[in-house]
Length: 534
Image 1 (spheres, one colour):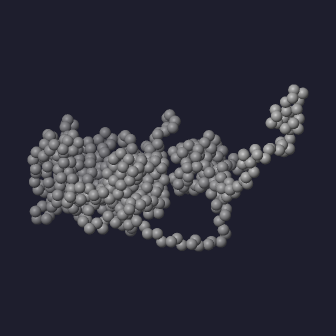
Image 2 (cartoon, one colour; image 1 turned 180 degrees about the vertical axis):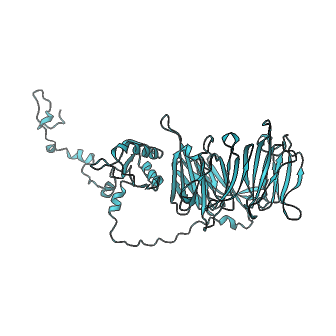
Image 3 (cartoon, one colour; image 1 turned 120 degrees about the vertical axis):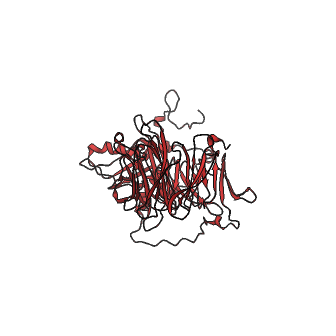
């Protein structure tokens, strides 16, 4: 009671009547004010306060279709499906403004749980193609203040000082012509020189916690990609500095184009509600600028062929052609069609897919923009199976072959694109047994002539097949026992004429895999997996 000023009004019971106390008249003791630090000047960070608008987790999605009120719920469902793959949308966190006639204005506000999720949404969906007429333009709500401060007159930015970039081909300057390889163990990642003379690896670079998943070299060895929950980073040069990073939440798969200019990242997302299907997201980036060129998102059924169970990566397959005159192509298989796109425009070639009823597999020539596709028998065998070779971008058919009594087909391109082989598994007329043979195509000859190759014992199982790189020979492992035979063939006879010829056969080899050296001439016969290398 003694600590409360006697001037405070009190009731008859002696207690202070706080309803009659004026807080502005209360004077605190000087020593209490100093102890609490209330006499210190208050510093207000005006710039920081201005930036903290409270809308840091809100994005604006522009260029949406303008639709009547009856269709708003459907559009909200589509937008929710797209953006919920990136982050958590707050309850009631999506707004599509409407005019007096209840027609949407063509943009939406989406609020995420965190600012980081909002930033990821901007990076991953800006440029997303909803349909032919509506391509998303996405920015953060807080960016509007920045845009409002842009001056009316253009002022050229000051040139940036030159910064030396990492030489991604530095490893090719090694005096001993060695290659590099990478090892992962635990949380450690190490890069070594492959020293064939000492038969020991010489450490080049080591880093802990470099990736949260795995690492992968680019096709030419210029770049090393590390995969993280938020996306992918590229590293290279003598010091393995970071060259670029690409945002993709939950990324699981990556695939470089053969020329290393483009990078595809992919992920699958399980449905959040019962009855919904798995969603697939595939992003394409320019490795040099870091720009996201295009995103594909949809149910898993849009990315698999008829009868296929589960997703097979890569969803999109790159062509081997990098000639600027004809472009770089990539394609995906769908139900009864193959969709071919051209980079860097990332547009569908001829604005329509290639219709191929029942198509289940395709592959590109490693050297030319030629696509090989396989269609199995249909209509209970009334419609034959078919292999077709098609050249892009004109979609002209190079050669096709109808096949009967086919159980399965496996396709093989020679690395230089000179030859193409299809292993055909057929049933006998009685349907009680099967046998294998090969259809061989000569791509460099006029009209692409072809011939059939069958083993002396057609009933023998074909274990493995491999073309010699940069050559005209191939090897086949065939036989039903634990020690099959290995036969070598040439696409030319002894006189150099185009005639498939048996060179020789090695009997009773414990092998189930074939590995040619990159320049040919040398081959490894390996017994892997179930053979345990014995």
